[in-house]
Amino acid sequence: VQLQASGGGLVHPGGSLRLSCAASGFTLDRPAIGWFRQAPGKEREGVSCISSLNEITHYSDSVKDRFTISIDKAKNTVYLQMNNLRPEDTAVYYCATDLGHSSSYALCQRGPTDWGQGTQVTVSS
Image (cartoon, rainbow, N blue to C red; front, side):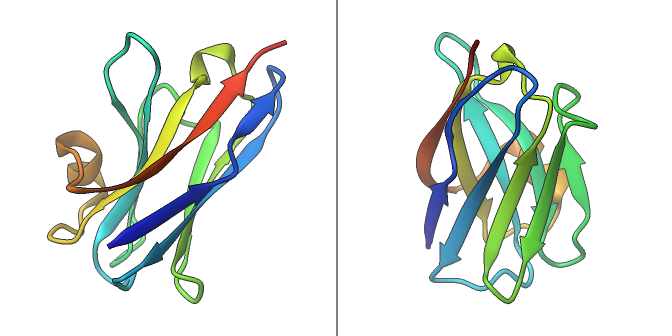
């Protein structure tokens, strides 16, 4: 299982970024996959997850209505479109999955088993 995340960077408050996670070694046709973040001194948070089986999504309350997760099965890639970014969104963002589960809610709540490398997102004026 390999997860290659990209798309992080520095953006002003109110700006947008799109994160990408290219999956390899498995097919996005059943497992849940998602984005998690960790800021210095804070606990890890499940930001958004999606089931590759039925494309049901789950969002944390802190990003609902601002972030959108999507999946491109032809490219075996998951995206996180982040709009109206806030300074409190600053964190390292990780793409992660659990091949044994297809529930997006369960993945975000219980945590994944396979992690990709992180990509830094910094929101600052």
